[in-house]
Length: 115
Length: 110
Image (cartoon, rainbow over all chains, first blue to last red; front, top):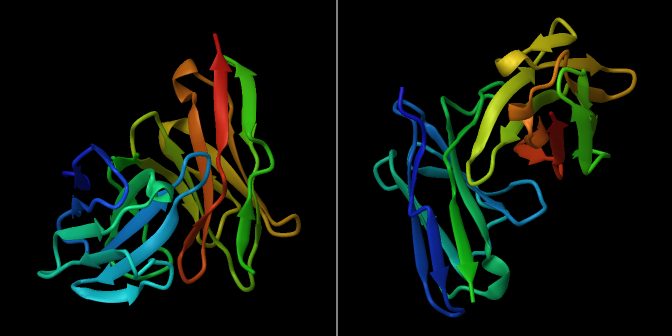
């Protein structure tokens, strides 16, 4: 079974530029998550989708971050404009459903460096 | 507030010795607890979870965790450490979202 795929793996941009990340979840997984992991910290949830609807985006900085999952499968996360403090690893995860017992499976992440 | 704590930034252990990585939690209601491992430049890999039932949970790669309700702990254990176990370990608790600890770096020396 293929895991969660993410691209690119690395991205270096200058502040005020825009960037987009792509995620393809495990086949059949209805729920998709985007996390931000700053160096030395645990991952923090940014946004959660159930199929193509947003379940929780309370921690997404909506003035600069946006995400979509138009067809209920792939998802993109965009930052525009980027700030220095956005330097982090962006992790995508997926799970079968919304149950608390559902295990989240993570992709390899995209390491973003903002200069 | 719901939270999880990993009191040790780093744990050092000799290969072949038992290892323990500590985790304590604070939640209202029944806790749903998870352990993940992160190798360099890779995402998080699921190790095991506690939902209900037996307090000793067995997981991947020979790891197990013991749920202790009275001490609000969920420590990760392995009877015999391998050098390849060296990685960053995260404890997490699910409330309305998955909340991670700050991670514990495990270093296994040959």
